[in-house]
Image 1 (cartoon, rainbow, N blue to C red):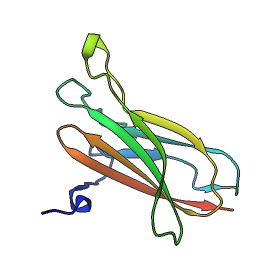
Image 2 (image 1 turned 90 degrees about the horizontal axis):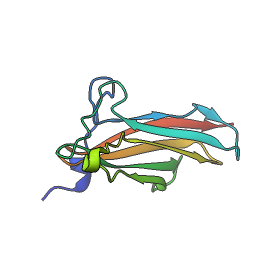
Image 3 (image 1 turned 120 degrees about the horizontal axis):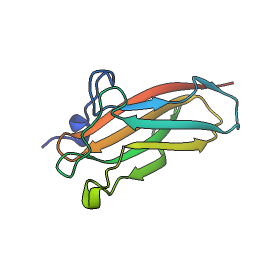
Length: 124
């Protein structure tokens, strides 16, 4: 039996349409609000049809030296062609942090499974 961690895929988002792209500043001020945006299919569009779509994107923050990441955002995409409605998998949130750490984005494609990306963020 596989551990779920063994099923999470990653890659270069410039060449793989399933990898969530994370937009966030490299440095933020302690306790100051900033925006994080995660997009699936930024360079190579994902089909987002009834047959092949992104179901959700989750964003986590793992403070430096913390054992576990903390989920800070979750967006589900429910319309996949019903009544000619098609979602574009993108989520934006505003948050504040007090420690440097890692932002993780995880997305789920109904055909190709789980995909991840992460970036480091420093607190001044």
